[in-house]
Amino acid sequence: MTKYVIQGGKPLYGEINISGAKNAAVAIIPAALLVDGVCRIENIPQISDVTSILNILQDLGADVRTVNRTTVDVDCSHIRNAKVPEELARKIRASYYLIGALLGRFGSAEVPPPGGCDFGGRPIDQHIKGFVAMGADVDVHGGYIHAKAKTGRMIGTQVYLDMVSVGATMNIILAATLADGMTVIENAAKEPHIVDLANFLNSMGADIMGAGTDVIKVRGVERLTGGSYSIIPDQIEAGTYMTAVAAAGGEVLIRNVIPKHLECITAKLLEMGVEVEERDDAVLVRRHGPLSRTNVKTLPYPGFPTDMQPQIAAVLCLAQGTSVLTEGVWDNRYRYVDEFRRMGAQIQVDGKVAVIEGASHLSGAKLQACDLRAGAAMVIAALAGQGTSEVSCVHHIERGYEDIVRKLSNVGADIRVVVAPGEDRQAKIG
Ligand code: EPZ
Image 1 (cartoon, rainbow, N blue to C red):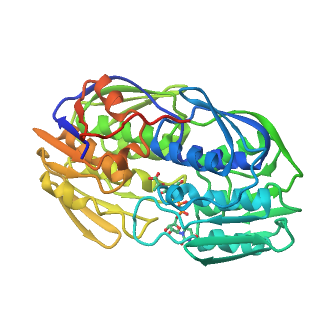
Image 2 (spheres, helix red, strand yellow):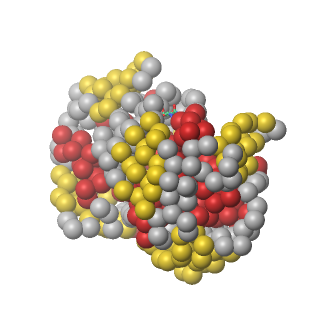
């Protein structure tokens, strides 16, 4: 099995460039299904989740051309097929965006239930509630979600989300863009990638207002036409490297970011004694002294992101004193804790709360990544730990982090990949 071998204890110095946002890319690429013409999508991250979603579009009949390392042209004008193949869809969570996009385009969709990281239950009832309110019949049989607009076209309506859901907000936007009339989404999620999806669609001719607030209004239009769009930088990738510097020490300029999107992470690092200086499109992160304890609760944006919870836990493991970490989004996102304990971390978990007793140091160990962000957190703990660590199951990490080994090596980390015999690691975006 391919693994990362990390010699810990080296502070990080230099610059890291942040790639395009995974969770924006995996929604914007399916959104190209709604467009009549060629969409040029720039700043696409080179990660396996993106490869998977592009493979699905190609399988449906889209013309996908790689322009350069981070840019693709996607033309979905000639697609006639609304059935997504099971083996491709199960690889990623974001395959659920194909339901909204195909419903919007064809008035019907057949999509297998999504895959992705396992955090306990990951229901999509709010997505379905939205589609049904907009006039679709939705049922699950034969291993597929079958959705069909009763009149052949989605109909604008009011949808109140029972909980703040990123996926449901984006999926309803996708279904509403070409609908008949106005859709109003209340209690919508406000994450930066929701604004990015709306900006992408608006740049192609959609009429979406209020993205980034909790009420989003989508006035259905007859047609979207092609254009070009650049995806925002990845808030979570940037946050992950910020916490890597906090844990390992050193000074790193993290470039190509939107500092505003990082404020929820910056605030916690400042509380812990990490220095963070905001520049126009970069943040400088510096840590030389000891780390102080703090409490963190994950919440929908603009709260502290759940996708940064394992990474901040790695830092808290090294802080002086007792910290309380509360997971406010997912039922079960502490599966990584046993791996941290192998390194000497002292963590007690009770339901959604983890109490972390800071240790003077962590020591190298053999670790197994159990999901994307937990895997990244294990890399961070290993960078800060004393001695050698091995992180296996790195395919989880490479679903969402472009070139993590190279980016960390460039700032002085002692990290190398040991490739399993016969594994092909040449993932490309197109
Ligand atoms: C997105 O997942 C992200 N994935 C996740 O990032 C992220 O953790 C999550 O948003 C929260 O920020 C993608 O964008 C592909 P939700 P999503 O719907 O949309 C409950 C990563 O590491 N809920 O906002 O699936 C749900 O159980 C990944 O990059 C319902 O009950 O998350 C959860 O408790 C992991 N019914 C909460 O809402 C629903 O219909 C938030 O889920 C939908 C959600």
